[in-house]
Amino acid sequence: MEKSHFFIRSICFIFLSSLGGFVFSFTTLSIGWMIGTLLLAALISFYKTKLINNHNHQKGLPSFWMYLGQSFLAIELGQKINISFIEVFRENWISIISMLLLSILLSLLSGFILWRLTDFDMITCFFGATPGGLSAMPSIAEEIGANTMVVTVIQTMRVFLVVLLIPLFASIWLTRSTNDLTVNHAVVFTTDSPFEITQLLWTLLLIVGVCGGYYVGKYLRFPAPWLVGGMLGVGCVQTMGSALFGTDLKAWWPPSMMVLSQIFIAACIGSRFDKEMIVGMTKTLVVSFFTTIGLILSLFFCAYFISHITGISLVTSVLAFTPGGIAEMTTTSAVLNADSTFVVVVQVLRIVVVLVILPPVFRLLKRWEAHKMERSRTSA
Image (tube, rainbow, N blue to C red; front, side, top):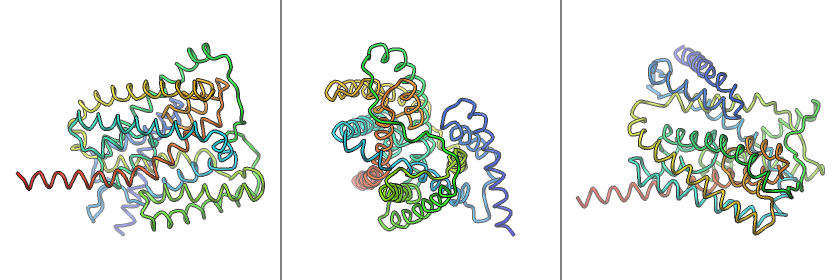
């Protein structure tokens, strides 16, 4: 009986939190539902903790909702790994790998500076500065033990600054200075097609891919196996199916599924916030603002260098380099007649690399930091 009551309270909490996402959806940001839901969920958890605490004193919503949101996000991202994706990577792999390495190294440098200038632990600062996506990084950070409040605030600030500055800058300045914009590939992710029963069958296969990827990820001890393992599982199914039929197969996956993913993930993260998490946030906000601006400027100069060396148009290079989200950067590239598919490939690959490789590295750093603190206490 108690479990059923707690389930109903969880549904009510998610619904109330989603009202904040509904308000922020009018900003037209693709992560508006995530930001609004998270803010309202955090406010409710601050002042109405009894609404989301069960008889076992569990803090926040059950993990089921987080896993459900992560699986939806895994299907969304995994579908982008297909034949067109692989072809673009094969043709431009040197440029893409250079972009990925430079952007990740600069992000880690930004996180290191943030760690040295604030009072938060190393892992929290690295997770906050690493461009792995606002929908993904806080949930993985929570599993490893970072301060999700700080990670969310820094990630949100980065996304807002990038989304506000880069498209405006690209449309006003880059399009004037770049007259040889060329589009080498077709945009393959935004086409609308009528519903067919085969799309529903393909969706079921992708769900199987998520489940299979989860078990593989759990066996290999991936962080957030529903997200990381599921994304790779869907990508494998999508790629093999497309190769078998000779075309990029389309699943029935309406935009509302991504909205639900953002709501579930944001509500779970927000439900676990407490007032102790915001101690020292003022200094962190100031430092993260300047480190984010520095990161954006550094990535712009790197994009200019890559554009000059490889011959890729400057606007395409900037939008591919900038860690501002797949939807926002791809939409901007389409409007400005840049190479949208190239932008998608770089943005998706960065998320894949960040989610698969960096969390285990951060986990090792966390152990090293804990061991170092233990040694300092022992010697004292």
